[in-house]
Length: 498
Image 1: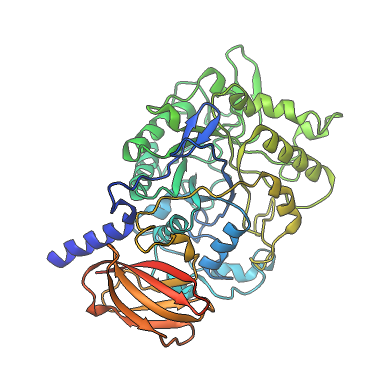
Image 2 (image 1 turned 30 degrees about the vertical axis):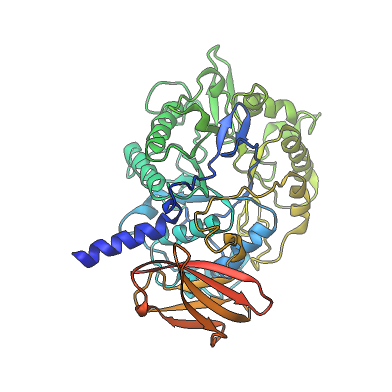
């Protein structure tokens, strides 16, 4: 029993490392009118990208078959994105949920370039992680350590079901289970100020004549406004610091009887008549989605005055909330597949709109295997689609730092690691391996969490860029590792001894 209790304590310490110092306050974000402010009341802009896969059958982000997770995350950050939006499905939180081997991918060369090269279990940092939530934990920790913000997006109840599920509940996942899952997520990451937003349901939709479609202000079981209040307040009880991100619906009938329809999740006109009421109003952020004619050739793309008709449509559907100072807007999804034609005309117009109105965005997607839009990466998962980045560059924004209680312990920033040094397995009670990404290491030092040096290895002998250390001689607890490279750079990481 004593050993079991200690294991729980060690894992809690490892998960909530930022809570070690009572004076360490997270850099959470809050709403002030149509502005998004950090903990110092500085205005910030979220300029992010979607990395999907958790919401699919395999229940982990796509692309890990092709390259290592740290390198992919670091390249994403280096491209200038300061935020990741991560879609997920509810069933991945079930006790029985496991990572699914992507055996069927080898049949789809368009999406996956033939035979998978590595696979999720060959990423050294992910070895031993068989549950989707463990991979999500890893990404959250990386973002915490490397000053990236994270928005978690509940994309569907069932894997790969986002195109058929209209509501936030299904026959096998009740509304209460959906809320309970969000409370679980909010509590799990409440010490991580990297996780700043909960996009509580992706694209609630349904035509107005569909009796089971999402409604706004209908005051029944289909009322998305009531559901978002219920779920949002439950999340804020678990973690009062996070943003509650509420998307629009598809069809809305105004009190005067007029009917308006738009993209799934893009119609926020109901928020004018029936605004979402949270217990903490400064934690509410609305989020429409917007796409071009390649995704679906909407009627407005055939208007004689296209694209000059678009700004007034955007203003009517969602941007009035920004103009009237009611909420900052996160364009949770926008994307484009190919150059030329109406798609690029729409895209350029919307990019300029985002810039002029100071809107926030998470581009769809990082993944090259989005059938609608493709992605930032080509199908090798490393070559950048440069023309897309050229469009996005004017609306990128500076990083939004995360707090880190160990930041000053060694007199260095936690950013110095950038995924170059990694430890596995972690936590451990026996040996631990430190991997270095093609870097020559001059020395390796181990410190207590308070900064006391307890071991030092000069010129550690590396085998295939890996150094094996006997951790059994360390007492149980959290430790800081500092590596000095041959070029005198300092790299740090954290380990837990159980």
